[in-house]
Image (cartoon, rainbow, N blue to C red):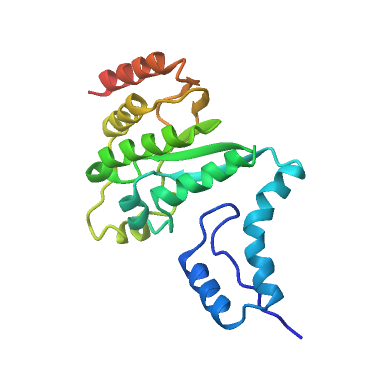
Length: 212
């Protein structure tokens, strides 16, 4: 006989999808004795520890932004709180995290809140690695822009650098390896935050001056 096992809807270690939570509530009220339901929910307690025991050393997390409004606009299915919760669970499982933030994700309109919220998310989670990539559209941006209902435009190189400057200024990290060296990046930055924060901020300033 075939069986249907409810899934999370999100990656392992993420905050449960609200739809899954509702499914569990319904199951608890109506079929609380189901072994399948109980096993699935138990996974939230067991999986992180088992992954660590099996030798998983690092998880790559595409947070993209810490701003809840922007996460909604790009249909990410996450919030600041759920992203922080995921990163804290990774740390609690003694697994390293490598987080990616997308430079230019919100366009000029959302640039400030994107940078500030992303910095706050990193400050509260203190990831082991942090990288930034520039938003690119190899197949066109039309589908992406629909979520903004005409309220988004691509950022200039100057605006991207200014957003990076704001992000860097507001990062307060203790020992995070930072990389901005992907092929999409217009400026290569490498260092450890916060040890190299002043130097990298200066490099961003120099890049801004060059394109002004």
